[in-house]
Each structure stands twice: as structure tokens, then as C-alpha cells.
Length: 76
Image (cartoon, rainbow, N blue to C red; front, side, top):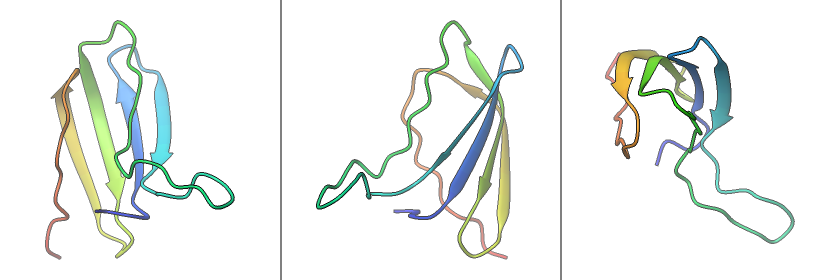
């Protein structure tokens, strides 16, 4: 599920957002493990950097907006 992965995106307009894959939402609560970003009018994510808990960094570029991605950690 990628729990603990830290994700930084740079949108088409240059704005940046950060999030982390987690299911913790508060005391005795849980949330969806999927990470969501709001891109507004941007049609692409210029760059997406994922820092996996193992320490591996993975970068994706020019990712289309308005989709659900499943990204697997690359082997070292």
C-alpha cells in the first residue's frame, strides 16, 4: 500500500504540494490510504517525486491529471 511514502508534486503552473501515504487520521480513526492532490486547472503534473520508506526515490514526469495511479516501488 506504500504506507509511509512521501510524495511531492509540481503542477503545471509551478505550484508544489506535499502529502504522505497513511491511514492515520486522528484518534481511533482511519482514512483512505490513497494520496489525493487537487490540481485546479492544471492538466498535468510536471513532476512527481516519491520517497519510499526504503529510501528509494522515484520521479515521474508529465503525468496526466484526473486519474487514479497505481505506482509500484522500483527495485534498487
